[in-house]
Image (cartoon, rainbow, N blue to C red; front, side):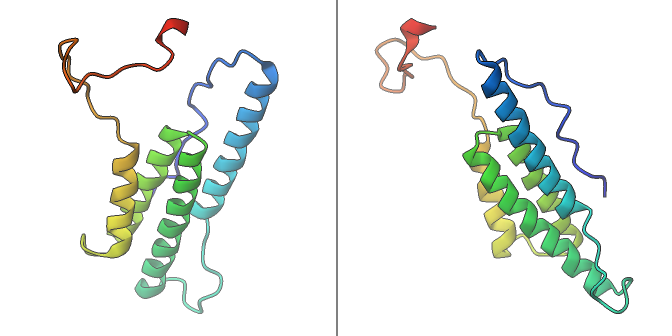
Amino acid sequence: MQDIELLHEKTYNAKIPEMRKSANIIRELVNSAICAVVSYSSTYSESGTDIHSIKFISYLKARGLVIIGAATQKLHLWNTSLNCFSKALQYLRFAEFPTSHPDVLRTARYMDTAKLYPLQLVSKDSPFKVILKHAASL
């Protein structure tokens, strides 16, 4: 499986250079953790080619990516978290987990929380309208 490429995203235009610097540091830390999880290989098992151990390592990588994805959601790094979750699903499918398995369901639920849903245009007096809190400052 290919490693996740996350550093090629555009950084947000922060007004204060320190904010941009701290955002880049956070991204680098997250990407380092992701690379550590994805590139982990088992030196613990006696036979590295045993299919059971390979599936178990895939499961561990998936769990690590789910944890990192949940943490990056808290930091509002939505693209990074979605990449982690989709890679975790790939690892779980490789380990032949059924779609009803709790880890697969949890990963799918995390993905659904980060998904952007399309907005519909409604009339001004509709109860389904979206009101921006600070619209005047835009």
